[in-house]
Image (cartoon, rainbow over the protein chains, first blue to last red):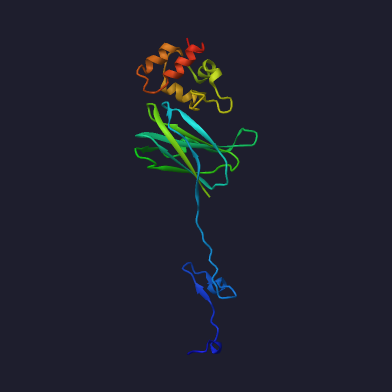
Length: 150
Length: 76
């Protein structure tokens, strides 16, 4: 059996595909255990509304708060064209700088439960007002679900 | 043809002062912008009958709002 105490130590340096050099040995603790960092994102339910009748061209808004990077707005409804907008509300309850106009968001034709969603930035962690607008030419019943991605 | 300012004047008591939208239903919170309203209802005058005539089958869903406005004396 090999005596590892008699072997020369080797460097843990490796070259990554972007040509940067890292030392993988730096990820090893003194007792030999490995340091592992998990990366990813989590999604939580922020708001869920019951079915509501939206007149043609009408909208509703939802005031949201929370430390989210983005908001995912999904909806139930049959064959409707829906658009999403958002504004940041400041502490005086006035509209702030951040605005996502309806026209800059995709409209999607939906026919299935949660078939699609639109993801928008969380403009203000204290208060972001999200608008959901029925762009169809007739009244539609819509139920809205808003998720926050951290 | 009515202008945005005319819509704001007629529906004055229904306008959200924070965002200038016409509040159609105070319970469920639906609202419409005055511009969109004029686009949907290209009427000669903002009267109950002329607005109803645009959508007699109420496909757009505004009849309840117009009825309420008539009952409150906002529309004649």
